[in-house]
Amino acid sequence: MANIENIALYYKPTCPFCQKVLRSKDELGLEFELCDTSANSEYMEEQVAATGRKTVPCLKIIDGDDVQWMYESDDICDYLKKL
Image 1 (cartoon, rainbow, N blue to C red):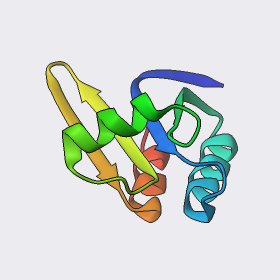
Image 2: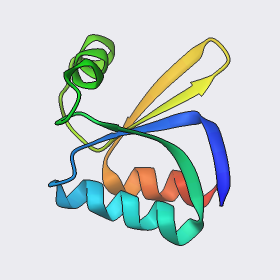
Image 3: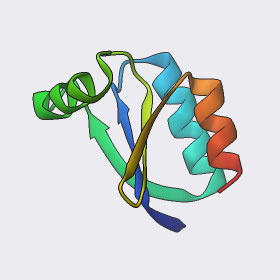
Image 4: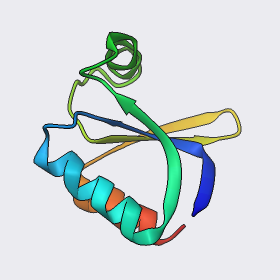
């Protein structure tokens, strides 16, 4: 498993689109931080403060001082395939 330290997935376990991204992560053998917004309200608060949205799945990508937030399960899966 490849451990990737500059990304984190904000998700809810009951969300089918989140499950799609999690399956893709597992199939690709990737490990990165998982932030369950339903179990930890701080994750949701951080996401809303940064993006103004509560939508999951959401991938947080940290590139030095630059932080990007990616929505849409298909876009996230495509991004993960390129890692």
